[in-house]
Length: 268
Image (cartoon, rainbow, N blue to C red):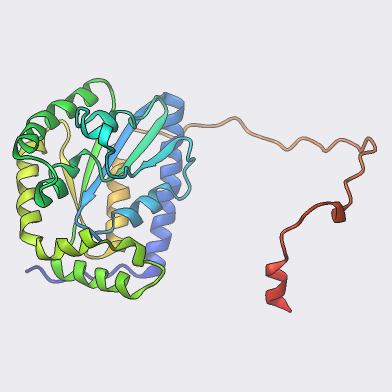
């Protein structure tokens, strides 16, 4: 087993992250101005750091441009549709970035391992997925796929942290806990998925996420390197002078309902 890498010091991490986030803002402006469509797929083990990385990617982005998609379980009606149909509805229009916090690859992972799809449905997915992704790319969408990889020991440590933290316990589900006992099943499913869907047009990019700080920096840096953006100069803005009063009188405060001054109570 390869030895653990040294963790990135917090000060170095925060400085590098802020620089990358500034470049993400530039990339976003280029996407908007050029009418580009970008899809970023985040997949990987439970507790591998996908969600926290997505938060850092979108922290300073315009939610009207960069949108996170984390779909719930399909409805009964959606179960009767073509499998990719509900994901197609979420694809970006011109000038938009869509980040899938788990995606159509649910069928090759949890559905395959937990028996939520039939063998025929699974085999059909493996045949259709490369075709589906080639169609997206042929239509001009930039498609990037990231697999977050974490060891079984680190995954269990993070699960225990969630279990003991009331603020993060909601992130732990019975399905997550089951993934511990099915570690090798998920490993085999991931290997088979890569064989069929790691295509030249849409490669899988593996993010080693034993250290979350390194994983975030590496993923964002790679994302930026894969999009041919350049800085878009925006027209300069100036605050207009405030016009003179025309006699407006504000409604008395006592005639309005205000929220209690909770912040003030902390100081008294």
